[in-house]
Length: 211
Image (tube, rainbow, N blue to C red; front, side):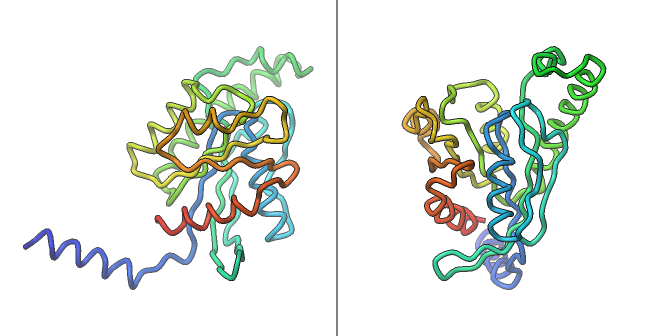
Protein backbone atom coordinates (compact mmCIF):
# COMPACT_ATOMS: atom_id res chain seq x y z
CA UNK A 1 0.00 0.00 0.00
CA UNK A 2 2.81 2.40 0.95
CA UNK A 3 4.68 1.58 -2.29
CA UNK A 4 1.60 2.37 -4.41
CA UNK A 5 1.11 5.69 -2.61
CA UNK A 6 4.80 6.53 -3.02
CA UNK A 7 4.71 5.83 -6.77
CA UNK A 8 1.53 7.90 -7.16
CA UNK A 9 3.10 10.80 -5.23
CA UNK A 10 6.20 10.70 -7.42
CA UNK A 11 4.12 10.82 -10.62
CA UNK A 12 2.04 13.66 -9.22
CA UNK A 13 5.17 15.60 -8.33
CA UNK A 14 6.64 15.08 -11.81
CA UNK A 15 3.37 16.25 -13.37
CA UNK A 16 3.31 19.56 -11.52
CA UNK A 17 7.06 20.23 -11.38
CA UNK A 18 8.10 20.11 -15.03
CA UNK A 19 11.71 21.18 -15.41
CA UNK A 20 12.23 24.60 -16.91
CA UNK A 21 15.61 23.49 -18.20
CA UNK A 22 17.12 20.03 -18.71
CA UNK A 23 20.76 19.83 -17.60
CA UNK A 24 22.77 17.98 -20.23
CA UNK A 25 26.43 17.19 -19.58
CA UNK A 26 28.91 16.53 -22.37
CA UNK A 27 31.42 13.91 -21.22
CA UNK A 28 34.14 11.85 -22.85
CA UNK A 29 37.90 11.42 -23.32
CA UNK A 30 40.17 14.33 -24.36
CA UNK A 31 39.97 15.55 -27.96
CA UNK A 32 36.82 13.57 -28.77
CA UNK A 33 35.00 16.75 -29.80
CA UNK A 34 32.87 17.65 -26.76
CA UNK A 35 33.55 21.37 -27.01
CA UNK A 36 33.21 21.30 -30.82
CA UNK A 37 29.72 19.82 -30.46
CA UNK A 38 28.75 22.18 -27.63
CA UNK A 39 30.04 25.10 -29.73
CA UNK A 40 27.98 24.06 -32.74
CA UNK A 41 24.80 23.79 -30.65
CA UNK A 42 25.38 27.10 -28.86
CA UNK A 43 26.36 28.88 -32.08
CA UNK A 44 23.24 27.61 -33.85
CA UNK A 45 20.84 28.57 -31.07
CA UNK A 46 22.46 31.43 -29.15
CA UNK A 47 24.88 32.88 -31.67
CA UNK A 48 27.84 32.41 -29.34
CA UNK A 49 30.31 29.59 -28.78
CA UNK A 50 30.94 28.09 -25.35
CA UNK A 51 34.69 27.39 -25.42
CA UNK A 52 38.02 27.20 -27.24
CA UNK A 53 38.94 24.22 -29.43
CA UNK A 54 42.48 23.13 -30.32
CA UNK A 55 44.48 20.02 -31.17
CA UNK A 56 46.22 20.19 -27.79
CA UNK A 57 44.74 17.63 -25.36
CA UNK A 58 42.92 19.01 -22.31
CA UNK A 59 42.33 22.40 -23.89
CA UNK A 60 39.15 22.49 -21.80
CA UNK A 61 40.36 22.24 -18.19
CA UNK A 62 37.37 23.70 -16.36
CA UNK A 63 33.66 22.93 -16.52
CA UNK A 64 31.93 25.53 -18.70
CA UNK A 65 28.22 25.90 -19.28
CA UNK A 66 25.54 27.88 -21.04
CA UNK A 67 22.18 28.48 -19.36
CA UNK A 68 18.83 28.29 -21.14
CA UNK A 69 19.80 27.18 -24.63
CA UNK A 70 16.43 26.98 -26.39
CA UNK A 71 16.42 24.44 -29.21
CA UNK A 72 13.55 24.21 -31.70
CA UNK A 73 13.37 21.02 -33.73
CA UNK A 74 10.56 19.64 -35.86
CA UNK A 75 7.88 21.69 -34.16
CA UNK A 76 9.13 20.97 -30.65
CA UNK A 77 10.97 23.30 -28.28
CA UNK A 78 13.16 22.38 -25.33
CA UNK A 79 15.35 24.48 -23.09
CA UNK A 80 18.69 23.00 -22.06
CA UNK A 81 21.50 23.92 -19.74
CA UNK A 82 24.54 22.67 -21.66
CA UNK A 83 27.52 21.67 -19.54
CA UNK A 84 30.83 21.09 -21.35
CA UNK A 85 33.35 19.20 -19.24
CA UNK A 86 37.12 18.59 -19.40
CA UNK A 87 38.21 15.34 -21.02
CA UNK A 88 38.31 12.37 -18.66
CA UNK A 89 41.66 10.56 -18.44
CA UNK A 90 43.09 7.93 -16.09
CA UNK A 91 46.49 9.64 -16.08
CA UNK A 92 47.78 13.07 -17.09
CA UNK A 93 51.50 13.55 -17.70
CA UNK A 94 52.79 17.06 -18.24
CA UNK A 95 55.28 15.67 -20.79
CA UNK A 96 52.51 15.11 -23.33
CA UNK A 97 52.08 18.88 -23.52
CA UNK A 98 55.77 19.35 -24.34
CA UNK A 99 55.14 17.65 -27.70
CA UNK A 100 52.95 20.61 -28.66
CA UNK A 101 55.67 23.18 -28.05
CA UNK A 102 54.45 24.17 -24.59
CA UNK A 103 57.25 25.07 -22.16
CA UNK A 104 57.77 22.92 -19.07
CA UNK A 105 56.36 25.34 -16.43
CA UNK A 106 53.20 25.89 -18.49
CA UNK A 107 52.95 22.16 -19.24
CA UNK A 108 53.03 21.35 -15.51
CA UNK A 109 50.42 24.01 -14.84
CA UNK A 110 48.17 22.59 -17.59
CA UNK A 111 48.55 19.07 -16.22
CA UNK A 112 47.57 20.24 -12.73
CA UNK A 113 44.56 22.16 -14.06
CA UNK A 114 43.49 19.21 -16.22
CA UNK A 115 43.64 16.87 -13.21
CA UNK A 116 41.48 19.26 -11.18
CA UNK A 117 39.14 19.55 -14.17
CA UNK A 118 38.55 15.78 -14.18
CA UNK A 119 37.67 15.83 -10.47
CA UNK A 120 35.31 18.74 -11.13
CA UNK A 121 33.70 16.86 -14.04
CA UNK A 122 32.94 13.81 -11.90
CA UNK A 123 31.48 16.02 -9.16
CA UNK A 124 29.17 17.69 -11.68
CA UNK A 125 27.68 14.29 -12.58
CA UNK A 126 25.52 14.50 -9.47
CA UNK A 127 23.85 17.59 -10.94
CA UNK A 128 23.17 16.18 -14.42
CA UNK A 129 19.72 15.19 -15.69
CA UNK A 130 21.22 13.36 -18.69
CA UNK A 131 24.61 12.90 -20.33
CA UNK A 132 25.88 12.95 -23.90
CA UNK A 133 29.06 10.90 -24.18
CA UNK A 134 31.19 12.11 -27.07
CA UNK A 135 33.66 9.58 -28.49
CA UNK A 136 36.10 9.79 -31.38
CA UNK A 137 34.70 7.31 -33.94
CA UNK A 138 38.21 6.79 -35.34
CA UNK A 139 39.62 5.66 -31.98
CA UNK A 140 39.24 2.37 -30.08
CA UNK A 141 36.05 2.63 -27.97
CA UNK A 142 37.13 -0.22 -25.66
CA UNK A 143 39.28 2.02 -23.46
CA UNK A 144 39.54 2.13 -19.68
CA UNK A 145 38.47 5.77 -19.75
CA UNK A 146 35.24 5.06 -21.66
CA UNK A 147 34.39 2.10 -19.44
CA UNK A 148 35.00 4.26 -16.34
CA UNK A 149 32.70 7.01 -17.65
CA UNK A 150 29.92 4.53 -18.47
CA UNK A 151 30.34 2.87 -15.08
CA UNK A 152 29.87 6.19 -13.27
CA UNK A 153 26.70 6.89 -15.24
CA UNK A 154 25.24 3.42 -14.68
CA UNK A 155 25.84 3.79 -10.93
CA UNK A 156 23.95 7.08 -10.94
CA UNK A 157 21.18 5.81 -13.27
CA UNK A 158 21.61 8.81 -15.58
CA UNK A 159 20.07 8.63 -19.11
CA UNK A 160 22.81 8.41 -21.74
CA UNK A 161 23.25 9.15 -25.44
CA UNK A 162 26.52 8.17 -27.12
CA UNK A 163 27.87 10.27 -29.96
CA UNK A 164 30.40 8.76 -32.36
CA UNK A 165 32.03 11.98 -33.52
CA UNK A 166 34.40 12.63 -36.45
CA UNK A 167 32.59 10.43 -38.98
CA UNK A 168 34.26 12.62 -41.62
CA UNK A 169 37.53 10.72 -40.94
CA UNK A 170 38.38 7.65 -43.05
CA UNK A 171 39.15 5.53 -39.99
CA UNK A 172 35.79 6.29 -38.38
CA UNK A 173 33.87 3.12 -37.45
CA UNK A 174 30.44 3.70 -35.93
CA UNK A 175 29.66 -0.04 -35.81
CA UNK A 176 32.63 -0.59 -33.51
CA UNK A 177 31.24 2.01 -31.10
CA UNK A 178 27.81 0.37 -31.28
CA UNK A 179 29.34 -3.04 -30.55
CA UNK A 180 31.22 -1.63 -27.56
CA UNK A 181 28.07 -0.16 -25.99
CA UNK A 182 25.08 -2.12 -27.39
CA UNK A 183 22.75 -1.05 -24.56
CA UNK A 184 22.89 2.61 -25.63
CA UNK A 185 21.74 4.64 -28.61
CA UNK A 186 24.73 5.63 -30.76
CA UNK A 187 24.57 8.48 -33.27
CA UNK A 188 27.38 9.19 -35.72
CA UNK A 189 28.10 12.85 -36.46
CA UNK A 190 30.81 15.30 -37.42
CA UNK A 191 30.61 18.27 -35.08
CA UNK A 192 33.24 20.04 -37.17
CA UNK A 193 31.39 19.69 -40.48
CA UNK A 194 27.84 19.56 -39.09
CA UNK A 195 27.14 16.11 -40.54
CA UNK A 196 24.05 14.22 -39.33
CA UNK A 197 23.04 16.91 -36.84
CA UNK A 198 19.37 16.33 -37.64
CA UNK A 199 19.53 12.80 -36.21
CA UNK A 200 21.52 14.15 -33.28
CA UNK A 201 18.75 16.61 -32.38
CA UNK A 202 16.14 13.85 -32.75
CA UNK A 203 18.09 11.76 -30.26
CA UNK A 204 18.75 14.70 -27.94
CA UNK A 205 15.01 15.35 -27.63
CA UNK A 206 14.42 11.63 -27.00
CA UNK A 207 17.08 11.75 -24.29
CA UNK A 208 15.39 14.75 -22.65
CA UNK A 209 12.10 12.84 -22.54
CA UNK A 210 13.75 10.16 -20.38
CA UNK A 211 14.51 12.69 -17.65
